Length: 228
Image (cartoon, rainbow, N blue to C red; front, side, top):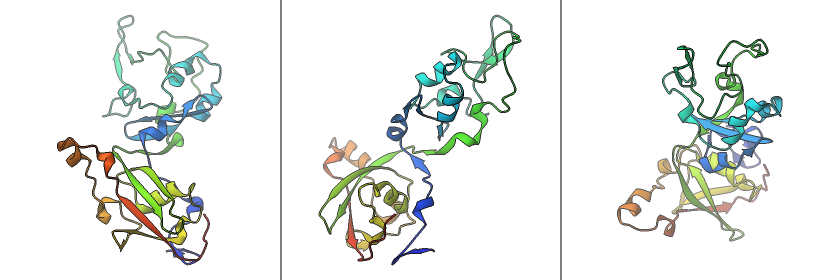
């Protein structure tokens, strides 16, 4: 395991997050910053939007910017859903919002350029990570400064990934020992694997507001000022 100062762990300068919450995807809802999710994956379609800027075929994609569009796809094939076109009797892509980029026209057309290679939904190039199926809240308390921040994180994220989320609030986050109830956390484990249970279902069963109790991770400074 590499070391940064006194702290062992991954080089977070090149750290790639694996998970994004639906709320994070929803923030990227403009043509200049356009993300969507489908079939459990998150995609940054900003380059596609820039390439086809001003093209009417981009409109259906812009309309769903920041949203999950899994209903556009056949989960078995990963391809756009298909149906029998009532006009031609042929099997065609089903596009209720209208035809969009890389979908062929309903009838043969001489001005449709089909030299783009794979359609955008079959390109791994746009993928940025996975969509968190479930998220939860956790409080991060810096015992040195008494500052507290509440983060929404994916349930499958490791503590390293949560640390990465926390960096905007504390660039020296890796210079701290992360603890819960007095025990050092295993940074490669998830919250649940570290014994920090998600009790939301129990709160719902008891008709109680789960936000009344958000588990807290305490950070203890290691005196090395590692900055990421």
